[in-house]
Image (cartoon, rainbow, N blue to C red):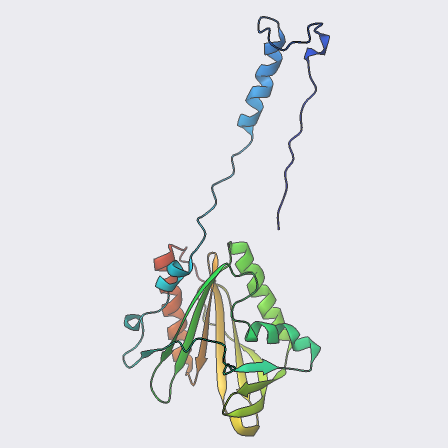
Length: 246
């Protein structure tokens, strides 16, 4: 949202002069220009905007293996759009916003992004982390509010995992780790079909002007809490963000 400020020009005091030229400086008119010249000094100056975040800067704020428990490894980025992505869908219009959030590569309004995936072994836990620069803390708060509303409005969706099958999933907001700003957590659980028992927990939270999201598969509560806390602390340190919790 942009707020446009338009300046107002005051009336001219030189109308009483019969000389059309504004050059003479010996006339009393300069006394009327003195207060107008001092007026801008009463207007507070706008603080300089922070430099825009870059993808390279955000990548440095991602978790490294040293930030995770022993046994984790970095998953290689497969890249490309080969149709192998996990997707969700729903015929319920109330789930439309959550479907859009879940299937998007980046949240709406993202200015720059970085991500990385990690594996704790053949059985997991599997952790996916993304960091998106939103431009301002206000934009982060608005996104978190919108995501929370999307989660609350939806109860069931359909999950498709290429090569594994399709199953209905329940959608349930759960307690989020109390780190960062305005944290939100949601759990997706396959309730029947070939994916029955498959469970994914997603946590999103704000770190000043960026949104950090962690998606955890086959993770225990301590895995989710530990990964989220480590990710927020790393982002705060690297990005010079305010170390505030909720």
